[in-house]
Length: 281
Image 1 (cartoon, rainbow, N blue to C red):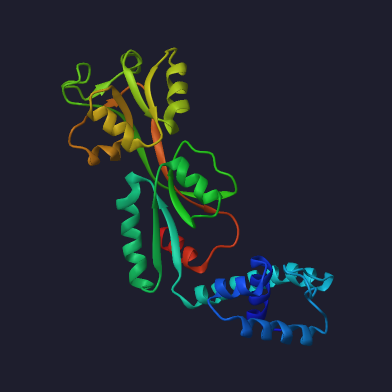
Image 2 (cartoon, rainbow, N blue to C red):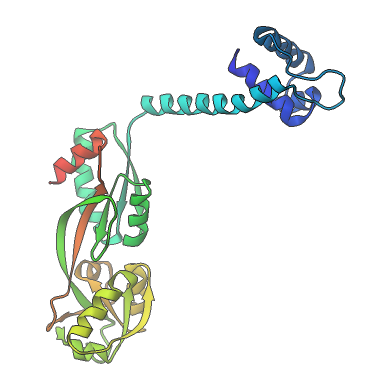
């Protein structure tokens, strides 16, 4: 019994006739009829009820139809795995916008030692990359705290202060290098969702209520909105290097920081990922 015969058999059943299957398979009818005859002879059963206009399966034919789908699927998966194993390994790595430069330095070092390994880079917000990592779409990713991970391990890469950023002419920040929480509480704030609870907690500890004027998914969006003069964005200090339109102030009466984490799933790791982790650590 050949895989080709199973493909022909399923096509005949799906199309409802040998002529329909022949058109779908771009072949003539006689070879199809011959292959079905050979299949029945090998299995020593009748697969079709003869004498009906439309294809009707015997009980044996119904069983073969169900099993053929599984066999063909397994054959296809086997083919894909064999092809994949013969190709160069590809590492799926996530990077938040502010960590691209840092991670690219590691990849340059790694590529010199393992020139055949390829990279598939996913850029996105911490929450997007977190979901992709937990759903096994990524092998490794950078993330920013605060974040809660399930089934993952992490390694701290860097720690940064959170700064208040706005356009240089923004009244309360103009010409200043620092600002207090109380002053910020009276201003329209722009935050990425990742920092909302963190900032609410900081203001609450100081007995203050803050005005979250605009919340968004990505720090780049928060930065753009601040550049438009919509309010004061609370961003990590590395984001300042991505904009020449913003002025930054330290938040002097609060220790507001964010960590850059390298995260991967618990369990057995591909050899290439282990090697990359060893290089970074």
